Image 1 (cartoon, helix red, strand yellow):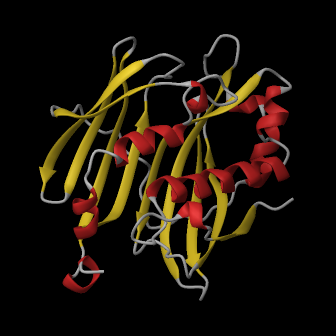
Image 2 (cartoon, rainbow, N blue to C red; image 1 turned 180 degrees about the vertical axis):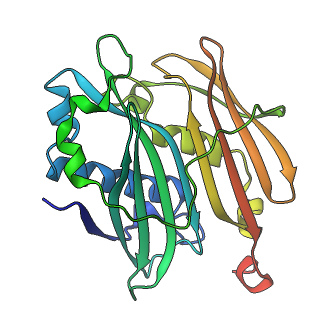
Amino acid sequence: MSAKKKYSYDIEAQDIDFRRRVSLRSLTNMVLMTAGRNADENGFGLLELQAEHYTWVLSRLVIDMERFPTEQDSLSIETWIEHVGTTFTTRNFRMRDGAGTVIGHAKSSWAVINMQTRRSVRLDTIPAMQQFIVNESIPLDEPARIANVEGEAANSFIVKYSEIDVNGHANSLNYVQWLSDCFSLDFYRKHYIRRFEINFLKEITYGDRGEVHRQMIAPEDYLFQIETTEKGTACRARILFEKATNKEAGK
């Protein structure tokens, strides 16, 4: 058991996009896998909670990257719990490339819900978490609340079997996919993601239909809102891009 631990990942073919850089979905997946592995090792992972009819749910996440890894890279992610409140806990992440250079950080907010009532439970019901708090911050603020979005629909979806996870709702990575698909290949040839933020508001379940609304608030800065026919606003997000250099765009 370790309050602060580093996990290493090889960059596989399924992790990269057409530019041979790790996709936002894959990077988010590695961050969430890191959280799960550390929680498992420290005795409050998903299986332990589900034995008591509880489960973890991700509330907010922010990822800020100097650069995304490429197919030639390896990636290590260091994680620890910084804070445990009444109903939410904050987990930090520090990302390094194969040379040991810090290339990004992430911060997440998690809650525990009762799987039967779908309501949050107090985190003092998991006293083991307290011994794994590390009083170390990263250069990111707590994931912030994202304002209401007024934009046109840029993508739509219907939740299918393959998008449902063990908690019975659409996996968070599908939200990332729906958001990422709001832009064309040509746009991605000319831009790289610098920062990603997401607020999860409501569960999306099998058969739900929805649209992703997109609003540009500044050049290269976009807000998103996932609206479902059945449940209304389910998620808000933000992606901040930076322009690729002429050399990068020409690859």
